[in-house]
Image (cartoon, rainbow, N blue to C red; front, side):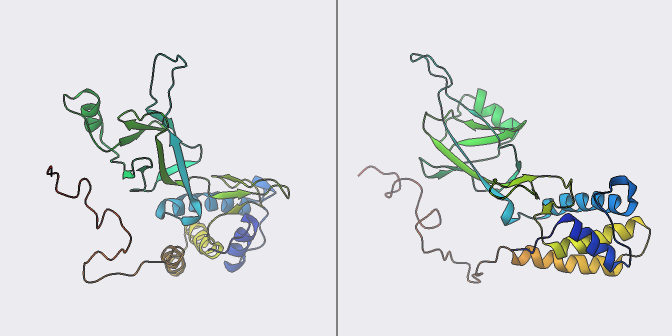
Length: 255
């Protein structure tokens, strides 16, 4: 877990280490240094967000098949599901049809989707999906009650201060001195120094090296790592797709 700090603390730590005077984020554009540094810090956080599947930003999307037609005699199965408002990007290979205990296939291309919609043969034992215009589309139309789930990375990497007892609020932009970006503060301080020094036209070789050292350490350590099996054998002791055939146990032959 990273060590977090307020935007004010990050900006002023970077300024102090560069030999600059204190910066005021509350003063807005009237403090040129603080104003520029807050803009650079926002840009830095947006870049870091794209570099890794940060575990603390991981969220789950769950949805259930439904009948969109209120008439009891006409069924209109739902095939399009809106993405969460904080959806940033999906975590690949986490899409599951929970009721059937099968992973979903996809995302399929526009050509594949066209075949599924209009092709002569388009039946499948797996649900397939694609994401288009902030909508999660599923094929074939799932029956009422079919549950799905997938993990995604939230786009909201910034924590906004709220009164004690209120639920936390997260955004994708730093707007106040007391905002707390959800990335390690040491990593952000080093990265901000690189960006600020580069904007001034100074050499950033050493600063860039310091930033990359912390960035690489944070990406490799924050989530841990599995034990590597050099023999190539599948070592998971749980029953799953690695050691149980998908389908009948007699190769599909009738007894």
